[in-house]
Image (cartoon, rainbow, N blue to C red; front, side):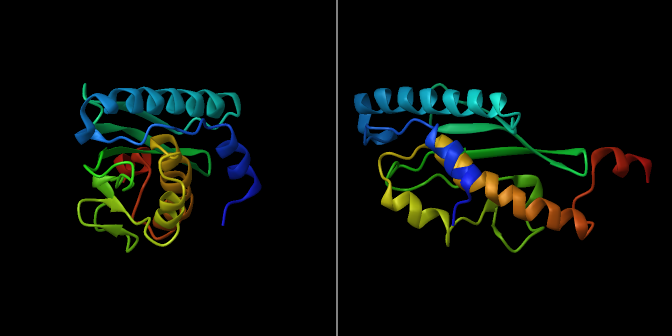
Length: 168
């Protein structure tokens, strides 16, 4: 399921230890620290590998995340807003990443622009609780989804580059 490049990148993302979610009070604090450390390592490794493709930030509690992701296709950068909430049953339940502006544009998406990760990612997540975190959801969920769906949406004319859309 995972190619060699993804395995290599995944191997550089620190695994998490604390099994705690937002409802776990003080136990959530060390978990969220681990999440940030893992995300920082993933972003730094991506930059080193010239594979920088997203920015994320959270609310103060670490329960609501938002940012941007982008995909380069034929030397054009396609950028999208992304968002997700940490489920109350986290880390047992993976976050549902959403790209609201693509809502309804592909069958591999649920209402609200939530990307479909049911078949491939969620079973992998379930086998790796509590070791997987937000960085893993980005690497094994959103990244592969963008790589498959965005070129397809572009080829169908459903997604257009912002510069070509203004020239029309």
